[in-house]
Image (tube, rainbow, N blue to C red; front, side, top):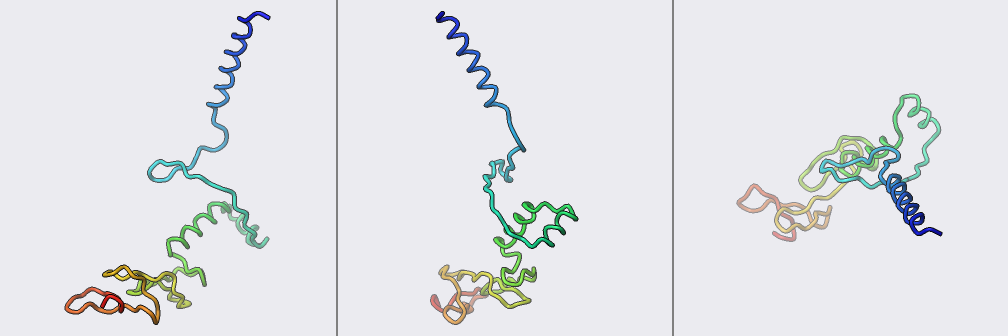
Length: 137
């Protein structure tokens, strides 16, 4: 076999293969505010059929709805117990005004120890307008 034909065939193969690798397939990658590509994975969520029908009827994308809800839960904008948005930013914790659930305890501004109901409560620092905790007072 002629070595020139083998080399020529190899070069054509490499050119065609590189063309395939450059072409983008599917939707463009979603990026965050800093321009970094957001990596994603598939998560199956079972929902009632009536909810699915409502989402389809109102043209609400399920994946977008799921992401927004989970992000709001993560950012403590929705109560994980009753799903209401009436969150109170108190001295000791973030809590739900409707069901009175504690969503997240805050940390002491003096020693960074977490507040806990009945164990480590906030106390005013003497001769100051700041708050500390029982452990660092």
